[in-house]
Image (cartoon, rainbow, N blue to C red; front, side):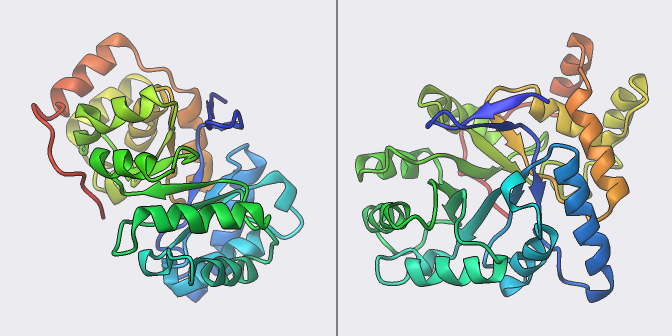
Length: 276
């Protein structure tokens, strides 16, 4: 599988596993655990979760799915913005670690910007690195101006920015993606199929039909073709995970890309960063 590189040189397969809205239905728990384990087996080793997801239940689910497999997983979680201070971040991180059943995170993110100064969040994150609780840190839902402020506040070690990015949400291409690319900061793309709303798109289905692929596979392949972009689709079943994995091997032609550009044009000018 194609890989992406973090600023510290760590390389990972460019397709991960999201967990937003998982662990919300007890009857689906075993199926969701099986899906995550299948993803790991297929090489989709980055698992993204957050203390917000199900108020910790998604982290507990991931912990169950990782049982016996922790050394194969690149584990990511995210902190509420109100917990991103020097007085609260360590407690939030340790609570996530307990729910996940592990002693460290491979990557810890500020979920979105709140009222805590970015300089204080940088200090708190670096303290967690020094304590061995996290290997690296990053952010989520920060726009270009926020990123520039973060770096100016001492945040040169920021490993990623996780943002809403897909065929229908191309605003980051106007400014944020080039800014991150110049600094070799990869993007984690959440909601890469727009929470399923892209699946029934007629034009996308026409492109998919040329490859005997699904619309979701084409939407993921469009992201995966870009350097430094790591989509994290949620898949709650083994079959869905396997379907997503095929996208990593799908090569879109110039004609495909031209059609997708026509169907989903990039905005003419920069707007505020969208988030869900």
